Length: 128
Image (cartoon, rainbow, N blue to C red; front, side):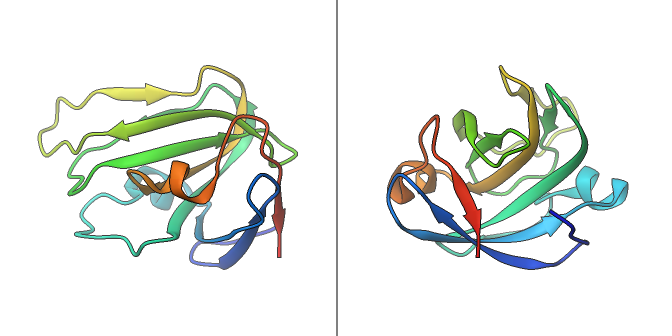
């Protein structure tokens, strides 16, 4: 999936037929920053991290303002793991969260959106 920081894509979920909108982050600076410092995120929208390699990536959430779900995807945009209800961290000693399986992409979204939109292990996403 060729993308640059700030690109907007709609993803179709095979499990629910719903569309979910993501903003991509690709550069090392944007991957490190993520949603840190943002006060809110619109319902049905998320941030898609595009990593260079397929591996067990880790999210560290300094200066987060709201709880999130993280949906981890393999290289074919299939859901391999979901981390639900990760709590905000405003200190520097934040907990890190990892996928339990190899992932090429991760989508951060509002806590509760993963279930509401039908993200499940095995869900295939299609870029629209």
